[in-house]
Image 1: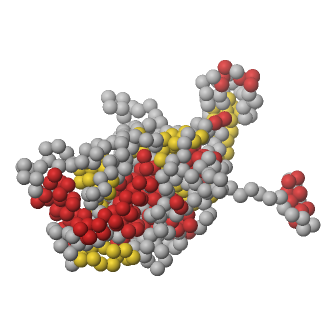
Image 2: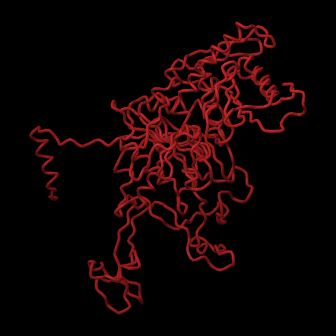
Image 3: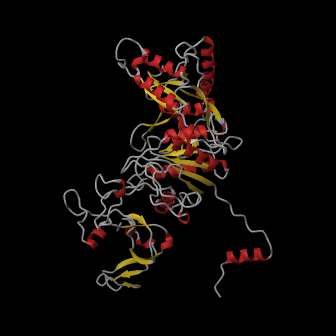
Length: 581
């Protein structure tokens, strides 16, 4: 009979006598969303190791001067069968040998001549070792990469050859973040030399609303690591997943509806203590701000990016992930009712930025800066603390979140006003509901001549005409002089035509302007506060789905005073949102 551990005997007694079992604390659950072109979910090329090259007679990897490389790059991989290895004692740190009396004896010795293992030392040259039994269920081990191309040649990059077609290229981005989390916990080293980063703190569900990596041959349901039902069908590069290397493929407007719906569905379950969004470093700020406007939730939404790929020397992304989990679990974001009082944030390099006021400034760790000139960094991670609480509306308090959006709004086409459906019967955004908002940037010496006629601003007038044909919900953002948002007379006149065609126009200053756009109540424009043009575009898109297009005058070239008042009244609704979000 096998011996029974004391703890097991206690549980058996409790069960036999119907006594209550001790309560096991349930870990918090966090939703992880994979977005497009995300360096944080990218890997460096898997290059065939010299171990494989030597075995198959391939040219060895070498230094630029032709000398042999000293080390192969090892990659996390899984064992297929148990194996016993012998680790040289005192090889984990150069100073272990300095104090051998602090250590227990080794497991044995390797004969320096025969390579055989013995329990006792047999000669002065024997090597003290630890005997380790490695098992497949242990998890990942870093090992030489042995794979080769189908023709037997070595892999030297993502693709079979430079400039190869998609069919000859590997996708370096992970399809969801589950493997990233496993590698952080398995291979990362935390405080005290322990690996207690993620799994010990929370449970995680992985979602793929607009992932960077995809399954071109599909995936059976029983192999899925993400949340979802059924098999994953064949996925198309550039429609279902979006990379920047080896081929650039970026998402389109319908993707925004898809990802918004998935995030809202997940967080509406009430199962999650928070959510983390991964995306490419130049645009994480935009999607995170959008989610903070649209998602009706009272838990935190955090954007994470990485300036260096996963596994690269001094990769910053893994730490950003761990810091975001710690932020969620810390609860510093809670108000007296337990709801998020901060809104959507980005956590980068131990700083907590509001999503509204963060901007990528450089392609390096620490390269994020604040925009708008007022606040932006609301706290830090080491230790986790807040320095102030923003006043802007967000998530469950947002006037443009999914719950606040109507099912139908007014749109405009060339023939006049039409009804535009925003949500389906399940309350989800329709792909066709995403508005088309175009950014027009003003610069000095832009007019063709001194006529001040709007007809020369063909970029605006042409877009107005296309919008009337294709986009019943549309608008413009003028990025004018900072902070006044001013532009030349022809540009202002052309954008006034847009407003008279039902297309709202928001004005902001250019670049990282640090002041508020002055109010001008008599024009037909929305003052964009201290938002950047990209953030103003997103807020205007949300407002269009909330309020619909501006009222159309009977004659766009000669509106009546009453018609202008009606337009300004609608603009006032937009303005209230811009002033508070």
